[in-house]
Image (cartoon, helix red, strand yellow):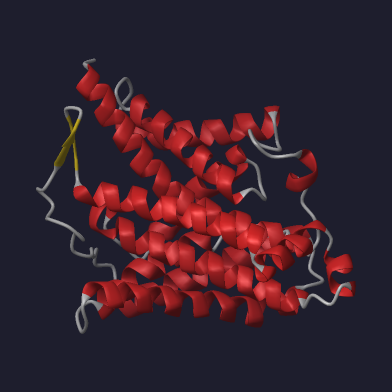
Length: 296
């Protein structure tokens, strides 16, 4: 394998890993605040791509993306308000079943609204045949968009959680909801905000990757599994580690197809999930305390 081929696989792996990270970050934000594993997270990515595609027919691309992110965020907040908040006393297993049901509901609604047709946003820069040469490897300009948006989200999330009052309140809810409540933090509002932020990040990811992966009403299920794998791999409750874990899984999948048929790509990610769950349930960068399932 030449150096150019290795670099090509690395860029492909980082791109795929960034897509997984979009989903895993959403898992971690909601888990950090509520302890809920939201298996509908992949549907937010689908909604972002679908809504922005529809809006791009009546307005310029970037305003369509912004509006799609806002609409999907509102959908996330509505889901928390209508379903999650009213099931507060449900067990962890019950909450998982509820989020799976929400995922199915969103998928069927998307099928009704947009049918089975595959759609894709136009490339933000250039076209599907445009490419940029980096050290001999050829990559699409859209890949650079994916990497740039992922980096911006990670940095913005870090500063939001560490330096803003809302971010610190969300972290307080994560550490001890009862104590946070006694300190005057409105935990309901923080939980609702976590759903809105995770839905918005998922939607933005769906918009950015749409030109590369295309958008389909059923794409959320596969992304949910991969995102969950990445969240477990990095350590539940750690959104920043999800990016590193996503890139790691993307690189493993990318290099695996150089020696195995592409059909084995999903098997590899599932095998990694099982190995991590057995060998180190807290993930590569997580703590056992943070990853312990807790009642909402």
